[in-house]
Image 1 (cartoon, rainbow, N blue to C red):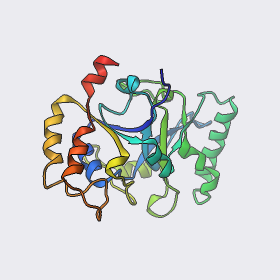
Image 2 (cartoon, rainbow, N blue to C red):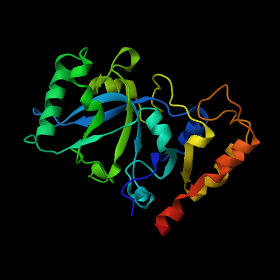
Image 3 (cartoon, rainbow, N blue to C red):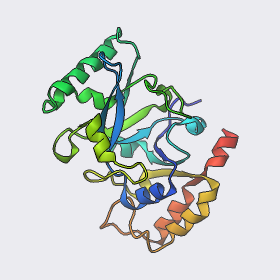
Image 4 (cartoon, helix red, strand yellow):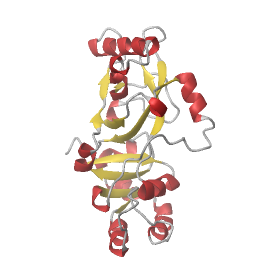
Length: 243
């Protein structure tokens, strides 16, 4: 049995988000990340990124992100500089955790010196520090990979208060920062959908609304591409019942 996937998966519970990604690419937004801190054991930082996970299909139904997803080719992910997350123990005595605590101090002390805390963008505690309802406590099973953006200009990393001001109401989409991660038809390995969304998504594929693919504005998107996109759909329930 494979312990990792040949694809990088991006999950959500929102079918409109899947449609948006198919048309415009993967938007860059700030994510509120837990960081182990010596003083309070937990602090939060807003980090601009696009997140994926590297799990085999038989673990897809246990992920914390959602039941709808897009699987991107590994070669596309490497080309776009995705990097694996380093998982550190929830124990301040461990060397890797001490590195995180020091980086958190540097973030608080001087956010202009991003080299001193950059590791926070590519690290995560083994277990969630603040437990979330209906979510698995084990971060490690997600095998997360990220595209993280440097801390400058409009993408400057945020304190928790700044992130909350940026996020606003959770009923509205996150504000996009920077250019999206773009892709072509051959970069997509699969599209995982709940059965109830499949007909709607097929209609979207063949609609005039979908006039481009993956944020590539100047690249043609013809009938053959639409049919190829259709062939990449996998029903979530099939994975749930058979893997």
